[in-house]
Length: 443
Image (spheres, rainbow, N blue to C red):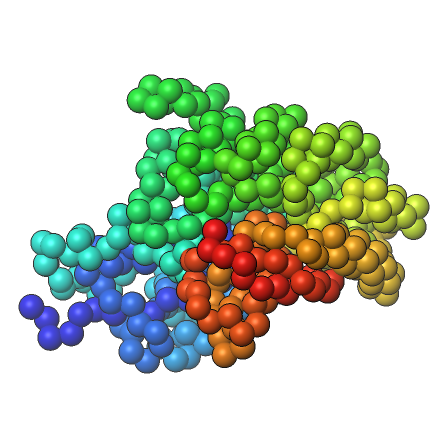
């Protein structure tokens, strides 16, 4: 045996979809006997998993590659910047990089690792050292469950299909098995992710799994996951009509009453320029019906202000939509050009100062709405999952809060709980984004 196991440093950037790619690469590395180093100096080489969604993310990725090259010198680059002109820019700026590959290209990464640091560990039992669901970068009590790759949409502001390709759905039996493995490892919350969760199965014509009798579609997957006795949270759900079918599952407590729907705008004209569904009035009707069926439904969304061609009238339509929709959690971005996006060619780009003004007005409006909706929770007893315990007490989340992007529940002076515990909490105070309360009992 070698005196020293080959060691790989790892830098993971970007969204939860990229995080899952990192988890899969790390799993393959561990299965091949590689150690993972917490720093550059202790590694035989470094893998950087890049993000290329917007220019600031690209710059962060370029900085990470540059730092890894300076600190270690042997660098493998993969991820969303690993294709096309971004890949060429990486190679030009870092001539000594060992390889550059696109997202989910695990084979190229592993082939390059094997080339430069051949595996040394021939232990036949090494597979037993890796959990059935693989290595996870999330805390032990929640995990991301990626159900598909790519996207069939061609939104004018987005280059994800150019980076990740068209929709490719995973077999439903594979997804359900991974979920079972995660739950068996102690995971209490499954976060279902993809580029378009509603489109799951479209590419395989909703293929029937003969063993389970389930079709490859979001509703059947939600039913299967809802039987596992853990929290199941749906992310990146486009408001197709069949989304209506999962709302009763939420009302029955099978899956969490939470929908993450990227509406992006409310003006039909801007939605058309974005190449998005342009029926905001129907969306309002459906939100109303969803809440009639499931009153505790939390809706999170994201929007873009200052899109090319957006007028004050368009923006006012967006503010009016916010007032009517009363969404619980909202993120807002000022439009910025992304290399390769067709929106770059649109006329009438909105000046930066106008974008900033609209962003501030948007956030002021939504902050008021969010504050009012959280105030309605005061006095209620809600299930809360614990994320951490620090010197001031426990910090957790309600069923209406996803990790890292939504709000938190602060349980001051509560130390008799652990991450992953689900407790019942009486809500006593709220601000614009977060809640405070006291534990009533274990759920």
